[in-house]
Structure formats: structure tokens, C-alpha cells
Image 1 (tube, helix red, strand yellow):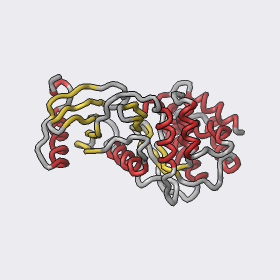
Image 2 (spheres, one colour; image 1 turned 90 degrees about the vertical axis):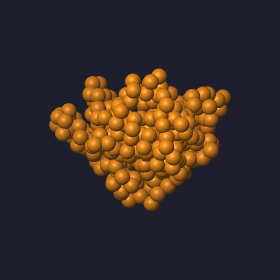
Image 3 (tube, helix red, strand yellow; image 1 turned 180 degrees about the horizontal axis):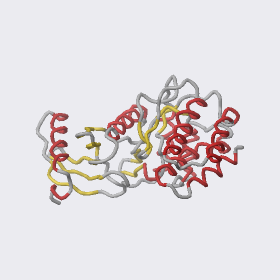
Image 4 (tube, one colour; image 1 turned 90 degrees about the horizontal axis):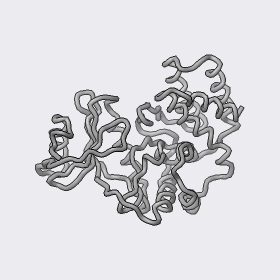
Length: 299
């Protein structure tokens, strides 16, 4: 397929330049193949003189979203074992206050019999990667919503302020929240010390792990589109359980490597709440009623 049909020409030139700098030689994009699956950005497989790559690009939206994604992928790659793949980042660049592009290792789609087990074990190994505090080195995005990753020394404070409190502030600023609803969620935040653990250990989490954010490839399962932070690892399972798509074999394999603590299922919906509120902020609709129902279960 001719390149001109697929890519904004400025991005096309910038990608060639970035890859040429990376490899120390002139790189030419020979052709592109549009890929589906993304709801925010454009995506293509690009064939170049240095081989295939995955290209994501956009000329609208928050400017640093691909820079943040690259940082998250880099951190996960540091933590990942051989059980799971995190694509290598080759280039990420903003262009004229727009997101620009992200160039990643191209992963060939495929399937293996033990994909679910590898995904579970690989995620468990990433969750063992820790930090001194909760947060991350920079803010990033869960979908199109900016996350406040300012470091906090304890999990309850981080989850209350940086996650639930931050999300409620954004929703309120849009005028999407009535006073009774605001009060309901504020009461829940006040009760968090009796709901979630006081002595959590920071774990590196993907942060937005649903079935659309992992790939099955010829070399095993791969994690993509992260919203990373160092959080209580139970936070990860809020998104994992929200829309399904993860088998019992995945959970069994995870628990073989890093068993989830007692009571995690009772706390699970409190972590789903963050993502339900985010979906309400982004898409509106019935997500607010779902969030209210979750809050009432803990009050």
C-alpha cells in the first residue's frame, strides 16, 4: 500500500529521521499497513529498510501522551521476565504541540497453548518490581485522562487523593456531578482507612490492563498501552475484572508466582470504582449509576 495514503507526510518524514538517528544510518519507510483496534490514535505496521515497526501517531490530543507511554513501557520492560513481552521503544516525539508519534517493536500476531499462564506469571513478576513510595516519576494517562502520579508515602493517601479525589475533581469541573453524589463519594473516601490495607507495598502496575491492552503474539503475550504507577497491586485487578477477558488459568498462574492477599475480592470493587469514574468522565452515560452502586456497597 502506498505510504502517502496512510500517513501525514510530516510525521512520515519525522519517523524516518528518528529511526535514522537511532540506527545511525538512513532509514526509508517503504510501505505501511493500517491496523485496527485503537479508539484514540492511528496505528500502522510500517515496512522500512531496517525491517518492520509498529507506528502509532496522532495530530490532535494531549501533546505528551506518547512520551508518557514510552516511559511506562520502558519501566515495565525493566521489570518484565521472559514470560511476557513488553515492546521495545525506538522513538517517541511530539510535533508542534501535538502528540506526534511513537515507534515500537513490531510484534507478529500469533497464539500459543500456554498464553494465559504466561500472562499471569509475567504480570506477577512485574508486580514484584517495587519502589520506595506510591506514584511514578511523571504524570501519565489512563485512556485520555491525565493521572496525578505525585509520590506519596502511603497507599491510602495516594488512592484517596491521586486517584479517587483527582477523578472526582475532574468530573465536578465538567459539571457532571450533583451535590448528593459528590457527598456520597467523599464519604466513601473518608472511610478508605477501614476498607483498604494500611501497609501496602508499592508494586509496578500496568494501570489499564483490560483485554484490549494485551496482545497474543508468536513469541507469547505482550503488554501495550500502559498507564503505569507504583500502586497496591490489587489496583491492577480492578481493571482486569471490570470487563472480563481473563481466564481462571491466568489467575491460577499469577497466584503461583505472587499470591494475592486474603480479602482482595472484597476490596476489588473499590478499585473498579476508579475506572468506572474515569469511563463516566470520558464517555458519560450509565457509568455514574454504576459508580454510585459501588460506593453504596462500602458505606
